[in-house]
Amino acid sequence: MALATRPVAIPIRRGSGFSAALQWWHLLSLDAPTVAALWSWSMARAMHIRLPWSALLLLALGTWIVYVADRILDGLRIQSAAHLRERHFFYMRHRSKSLFATVMVSLVLVWLVATRMTAAARFEDMALFGVALAYFCLIHICGPLCESLCESSIERWFPKEMVVGMVFAAAVAVPAWSRLQGQRTSLIPVATLFASLCWLNCTAIEKWERAPPAATHLSTTPLAHATTRWAQRYLSFVSCAIALMAAIACTRSILSADSVTMPLLYLACMVSAILFLAFDRSRLGSFHLRIAADAALLTPLLFVLVTR
Image (cartoon, rainbow, N blue to C red; front, side, top):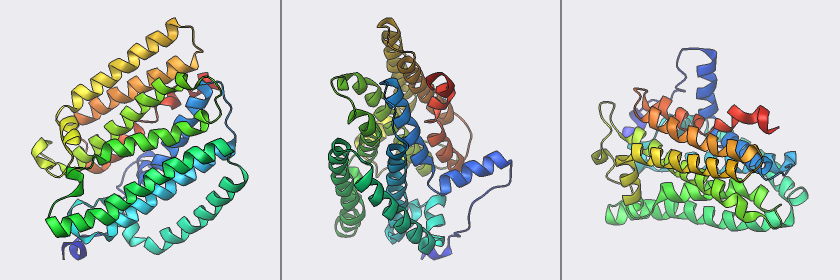
């Protein structure tokens, strides 16, 4: 009963108020909604679209519900107790409060969908919802069955990190995409780069959390999909490749006389990729690296004053 012996205390470390705020930002699952809303707003501004507050709120609330549900469901899987982290134990300790908050937020989300969402965005979000639902079924229903029947993890053949990155990036792009008329192809390059960063984010987290403190080798993640293991082994190369592609896209955008916002968004992608490279070579613990992985995606904040 390893699950019963592991402490479930809130892992807030002593330190500066800013450091503690980042830890709560992560534990309360506010990291992913912040990243989603920030990048959705940035993509819309780059395409000269002013998103209503309701679109960003809807995206943030929907993202929060998905992440809280995923962490609660992960905590219910006794077989995976060895892979649970502080965020999972936080929701195990506060499960009833979290479920109540999720129900309340879901009611607000339903009201926003019914009264504020455009028909085009509703149609495209329903498609993404179907993909997300299939993901939940695979991970939280088929996954435990696969582990119990054939003693093998579903992640060995299902590229979880890649799917999460693609779905997350698609959801972030939908508010701008659904409001574009004939310029949708202009959004594809930055959305693709952001999807690559989201995949890198998931891959890096998987590497940093499963590796022992002394080393981060491929052998420490035997249950991951082949694409994830490859990206973990060559994380520095992948980070540099994304940074290079972002730099090329930024240069092309400047030469094609785009508005200043789009090159800055490409520059934000490049900075994020470089941050992942730096964090992978740092000596931070897995808990702080997990926070840093999402903080690395906040780079559009560096240029928010210019893009207003």
